[in-house]
Length: 544
Image (cartoon, rainbow, N blue to C red; front, side, top):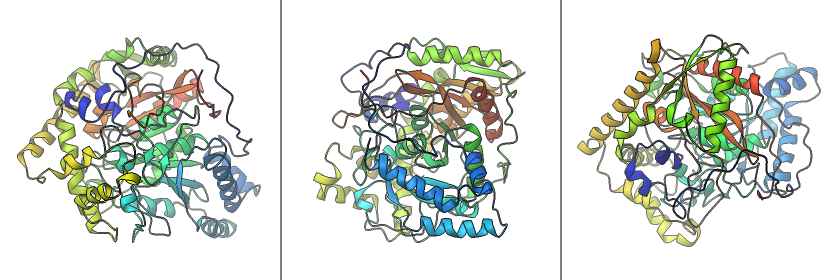
């Protein structure tokens, strides 16, 4: 979960003090858009697979230029060179000791003429809150869960393996998916330490899918999987210059993923281009009997081809909304959004202003209440069915207190403690808050999407440029963001590169109606092809 988004959406006054401590007082003034000199890049040798797409890698595999084993070996060498050494991104928390043997098996299948699909033999990384029934741990970055090996694959891991992907390792994250403390720093966990942004190393990779964002951007893998409750796919994708998609809640199963919220959680793809995100989504999505929402009658998207609408002219004749407050924002992100709107118009789209942010303000602190209740309920159920060394949220809190020097060296666990005080999902406070969150967020988005006869999507600034990492004070606000409404409503949210501020990426958000993933991916693809904003990171030491 990306704590910063609660403030930026204006939906939770109480969360301003509960979930997002602003370092010092006001947010820093946005920098000018003119390029600034950066200090020299930290040493990072050229990499043969840098920026290669899934199609590029498949071309190497089909021609015999590469094997799945050789791709894995190259990515593993890249991880050793710049994640654990060199710039020291610290994006990967654990490697799969069986990755090369899995690759060998997939190479044998290819040689025998058996191809499982576009991900066959492609190395991926997944977030360390996603169960894998193998030799890797699943810990949510928490020392309290160190040593925990899941008995079974999560549904997501099963889907990836069935598609032929090689789960090469797991990525670091903001501990407990950024739901531990009021002063936590995104990308820090007590088990994994601090992850860094590959564009400028002293900047945040954002949270909570920080490691997935940093790793995919730095070409430590072909693509990565993140999870989101509110902003945790789209925000790290934005600040790491990636395409990220938070799917409709229910499109991708949550079975075997350490939870925050049963009503908002979802896994999703993080990639360097729209087509790769669409291909990865196709592998992740599918009905799971263990997650009822994925098999509900309202879920029409079963085994869909999410590349089917990827056309350069997909914006022609479309009508899009643009968030009014973002369009007029006097920030670096606001200027980039105005430039993006000009591109969208030039590609044939009609733009109309909408105001979802104002419509969602009455939600106030209700979302935080929902998350507190659902977190305790979900974590207790998850832990009860594992061989983890802790069995309840209360056990986690006690462990952290007993091991405070290692588990809480920089910030505490106020959010965990607030969740522990909740009294179950039958409580009136919870049910009232849940109705308020769902009703208002969906009504706000539905009304906006019906504007002027119907919109194909709503565009906005995903989040501000990456802030400096501050383990003492936590994060600070760098500009407007847009994850809240789609997260609370459970609607799909795509982000893709919109431009740069002093070398720091900012993403363009496209939000659509439920199960409109293919449609918004098509819109994003047309914008991507028209702009080609994605640039590989250069591992600058600092800005200035």
